[in-house]
Length: 80
Image (cartoon, rainbow, N blue to C red; front, side):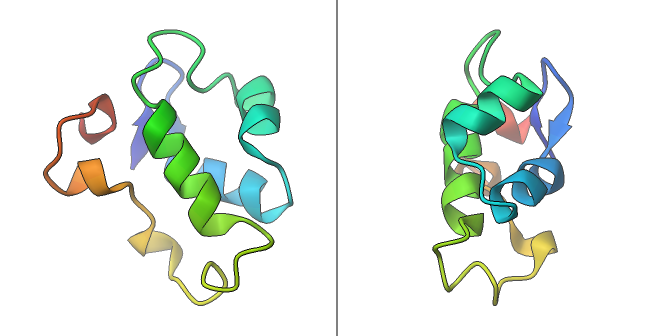
């Protein structure tokens, strides 16, 4: 799913960077997410939190299940 519409960055790409140990700030710098309109920031932060190298739950989750809650019927731009 595309999370950052402005940069066409998917949740899988964000997840790969987070699983490699990068935090939100590093991912933002590397990929440019949440640097234009900023509406994807909450979703990016949630994907990073789900995939953090420190999070034991992230290893159990299937990548296809990674999506921010707002994509499940909420109102932020990442559902677009």
